[in-house]
Length: 219
Ligand code: T5A
View: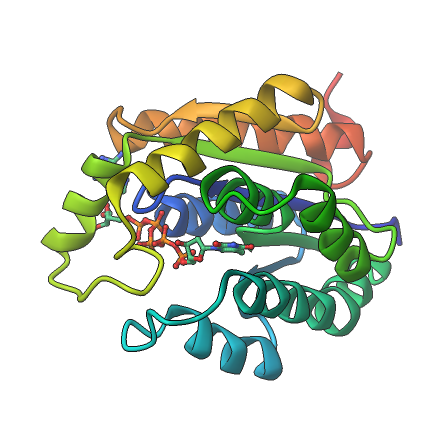
């Protein structure tokens, strides 16, 4: 059994990550790969409890450092308990958000020191890196409108000022510019079918790179 790999779907709020991840999961299964779909914050019992604390809209008083450390704590548990064992077992992990989100939201948007945010990420990752970040890029105003249409109350992060979410968006674009091998940016303002088709193309590329699944047999 080969070593597994990890794809992260990340980006602007309401950009369509959940929807695209469902299509990626089905595609991986069609290719004969076992997919483990997970999310951040969350993905484990402990991580989901931390998610509730982080996203609760009734506690706007949370300090920036408490927020950073809680995202880090959820990730540390996620990597150790779920991601590394799945990768060791040859599975394809697909995560709704991961470490790039902490850089975008806690550094670029919140303004926390870059070195500090990197340090918390490094502690949580313990040397691990995902194989690919698919960034769904969308004006957050449009993303929030999509969330409104679902009739849901905004969570603590979505309730931040629009400028905050705009800075987070720019943070993803900047990370992608600095590391084009690890990031692909998709325009999520297009019809969903086009976004999904592009995302699946990136997944196929990754499968080939990892020499896994029936795609091995294609010339
Ligand atoms: N966060 C997270 C940090 O600050 N630091 C961190 O380290 C981490 C890990 C997590 C929040 O925490 C922050 C970032 C976030 O603010 P979340 O649940 O991951 O919360 O984030 P959201 O982006 O708010 O999640 P959503 O579920 O609201 O958005 P999705 O998953 O991107 O969007 P989705 O698929 O649910 O789609 C939204 C709606 O749009 C429609 C869908 O049908 C759906 O109704 N849609 C489209 N409509 C038109 N055209 C398209 N192309 C469409 N794609 C989807």
